[in-house]
Image (tube, rainbow, N blue to C red; front, side):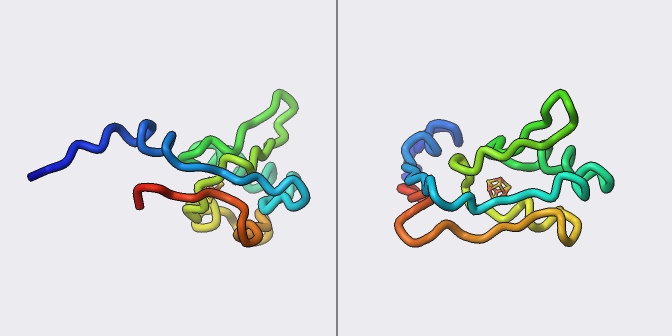
Length: 97
Ligand code: SF4
């Protein structure tokens, strides 16, 4: 028997986040992101909308919403991103796999 679990946004809403205010686990090299066009790619691919483009072209990073999926690391040119998992006890806690 198939169990209906809801839409992806509904399922993600059941997860919890513990934000580490002392350690932004994602940092972006603005100059490289702009010169390579990677900033726009990051905005397009992140499923959690962590990245957004400001009016001046800078890419802002709302790291607290990160799902830790690694997609941004897979597409960013070397040197564009500094990314590491949040410290123990911080970041996302999945409740449904
Ligand atoms: Fe977005 Fe995934 Fe990168 Fe987190 S790891 S910033 S959710 S693409």
